[in-house]
Image (cartoon, rainbow, N blue to C red; front, side):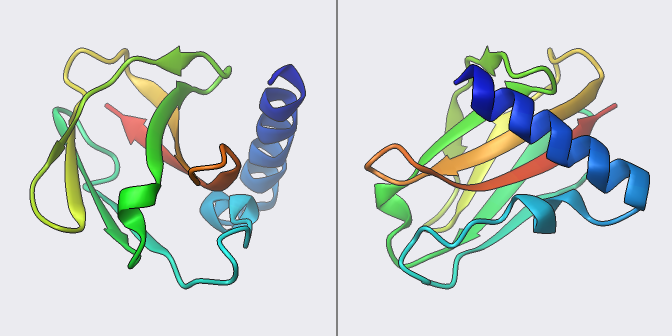
Length: 117
């Protein structure tokens, strides 16, 4: 876990330094090359973050939020419809957070960043 956090932070910092979108740097095709599309909006957010996951097998994915230093944040996602979830972030400390999707076997499939203002 510590190595994953350090790698994530390293890749994140490279993305910030180069001006690239870090969401593209984190994408890993470990979902058997299935097209998974994720939208986080609004980003930056103040109170509520909406997460839209377009994946036929999204019921097999787990959703997690981590601080930028890798601490897992206990969260409850409210399911709005088949592919949209909502996360209450009003009590989060302002800053960057990482949102991860994990397959049922525990592999991190996608990681995205969002900003809480």
